[in-house]
Amino acid sequence: MHDHDTSERLASYADVLAGELPDTWTSSYLPPDAKDDLAELADRIWDLDLVAASLAEHPLQQAAVLSRPDGAQLVILDRHDERDGFLVAAVAPHALPDEAYRAVAEPNGIALTDDPFLGAEQVSSDLLARYDRALAHARYNTLCGLLPSQPDRIVLTWQPDGSIATATADDRAGGVLAFYGFVQDPQSGIYRLSGDDTQAQARSLRKIGPRLNALGISTALQHPASRTAPTATAAPASAPPVPAGPRTPTTRSR
Image 1 (cartoon, one colour):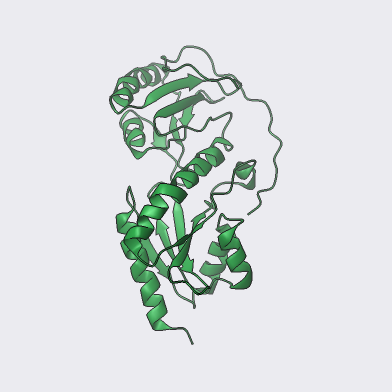
Image 2 (cartoon, helix red, strand yellow):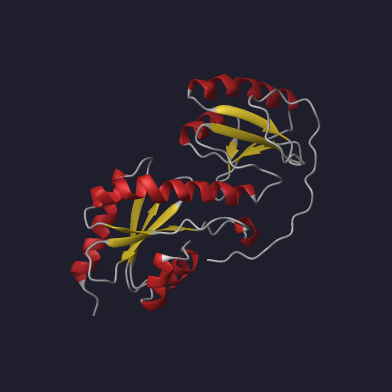
């Protein structure tokens, strides 16, 4: 029989942890009778180290899932050893194809102290940074030559249809992009500025630079065929987009 105290402890821990992490996170608990959801979640746990080893011996019986508005998720699960606390791991977005994970380093999970406030510090200083880098890299693989952005630098990439796309690593940048006409895909998290009206597109590009610079975030504009470092400042759109070369898909391993 499942231990009610154990499930309550996990759910409470996750609630506190979600409130202490940077940005906005919500927490939800998956009980033992949510077998299908737990199985689907276990398949998406993005780990080949500590958490994978634990799951190999102890299949997922319950979990708490932390979710961020951009689609990022973390899973909190029981720690089956003699120490108190839990394990936490990143969750791979189900909206991205297997090809997206090509050559992406696994953001392996970590063990957490039984104090959720200290646990939040552990997650913020270690796992979240690696997870955000892995997400940016995976999103890069889904579009033509989309280079992963950094918290202090946004890379805007021409797409073959004339639009401009970027994968941000900072919510502040996302707010600026959305204000000036970029639309975020809720599943992939990628922002795209339509090229249907080239004059409006150019105006948006001119305006976002100063706004992002004021936040300490530089911008760069590049064509997907380019594999060299793009220039430091984005310029208004003028040249036609350059199609990217074909990719060779590979299978993601987790």
